[in-house]
Image (cartoon, rainbow, N blue to C red; front, top):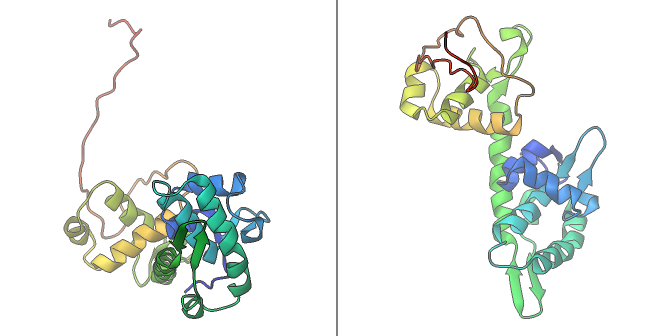
Length: 221
């Protein structure tokens, strides 16, 4: 699994923190996350262990004030900085309670949640493959020629697991889940690609034509 000290892309950090990409960029831009946990070299990256603090900041917003959340993050900063060389198993044996006036805040649920989602991210990476010899380097599910982003797009479009398995019988529910995680952590850039042919093994889930609607100021012939 990713180490505590691994630097994640912001899209990966969003998945592990269970927040939006916009939220991750916000904690960087507004210096909510300590600078020691952020790298701006060759793109934006966030310390894997710090994803627990991002999750805390947004998930506890209904219960803690901004001041209380920032105090908690600043208090945890020194602990996490000193423990960043430790494996996650050792990190989870640390005391992650923070005391602020009359409040006692337990960070352990956020640490465990980040650890679990990092495990999922590692499994998603391992389940995918990319080779110039297979679909021109398009990421596929390992051992198949099934494009990862096609599976993820089907899930995003609301296709059930059963329907996706009818389309790609070589998959299973876990591979579908991991494909979705991988695609979310590694979003495609630019406009969607247009394929003239379906990929091998694909079938059309729906085939619907949407009539063109002219501009309101167009006058019919």
